[in-house]
Length: 414
Image (cartoon, rainbow, N blue to C red):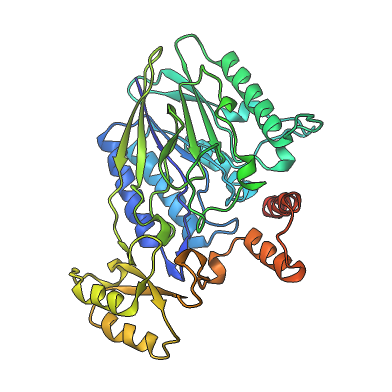
């Protein structure tokens, strides 16, 4: 038996409305080490978005490398695989790979190529051994996030993205089959958006062309024992497929994710049998509070009443809950901020955001214009609003796709 821990979307270095999440990430990483040690994990797969940006801070990088050293020290036979995601810089992840390989850590930041420009498939093929005996029990095809430039040229399918992805995964599967013996299971990774996946719009960048480029489950051959996915922050399986899963992010990366059940997936692989998956719940070290909960707004008196009824532990400031208030107003309230701060001053919370919406003009809540901060807007949102302002109509879908491709090319450039 081979026991794999599947996680993804760490987003080390993330800030929420200016507040660092370093403490929460550290609690998660320490917890993960303990869980893997206690449950005798054989392998760890981190399916992309290791960092929150292509240029992570020195603190975020130190946090990753400190974790890897501790993991190697406590679990010397642990197989560790890290793949790049759309938030990561492929070259930044790949740069220390010679050193990390010496530590037994496999890093695939981007699709590797040799000096002739051909894909170096061998770098994507990783043997997974059980810690007790060191026997190879599975082979992992460590596919990272794929950008447009990675896709084969000359695809004639009606959707060249999907066709190109199918071609690359089919070749990776063929390479795995050549490596693996009859008793060895096959594992794949991916950082992508699958059809019908549930997304958090505030914290997940649209991938390539957006929802019209959601990938079909047929991308993965039937003989694959497990597919470890990243990109979507809500832990979920893909369709009815128990063996194709998103692990989800370890902490909520926006207030929209407050109610997510954050987890890692424990995957037990036995040759010739379906994998057994167990969701291992991650304890939350800092609470996120949204009043009212969900996406509704409430009148000011109700919000203040809710605040006054809160019963919270008096924690150190770095452990206090992060708070967002969503207030519906009938008219401008010049003293709004002061009223809120008078109540907040008595509570052990950190107020990060006050969202307001006006309910006049006989519009329903669904029609309200909600104030948004710049960091909540995706590049495509800004482009669409600029186009609407200039031409008084929505941007054509084809133009949106081209804009997304331009953003992806810039994010992937060095």
